[in-house]
Image (cartoon, rainbow, N blue to C red; front, side):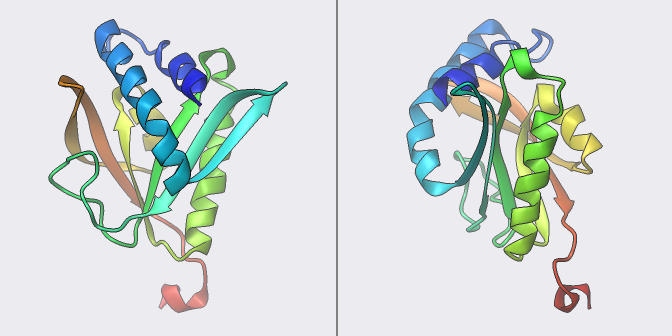
Length: 163
């Protein structure tokens, strides 16, 4: 996973993040990934034993996330760790994985989805129906890393929630 995160993030256009910000993000995420793997429902795509894309989700507990003041609403699905190796981008892999994890969340009873988008991924999530909620600013190892909290309603899984 560390290699995939680095391969995805190091190709981010400099208009979004400086090289220093990207390196801090890669280092931070690389250290945190072990704990995330244990606490999230993780899905990956691989080619020849190499991870090329990932997506994960969990039901929000209502607790703060990475020190942000506003937690995701309890019971909403939180989508995380959506990465595609830059050599594999543009092939629809992130969309396929998001379709899968969103369907899992709906089946688990989530009625809304939320995420923190990196600035380079905002247009992808907008195309998927996510709307901006608020700007976010993570302080990763003391370095500012801006993003955007986004959310959308999820489709109803059964007749009971449609009422």
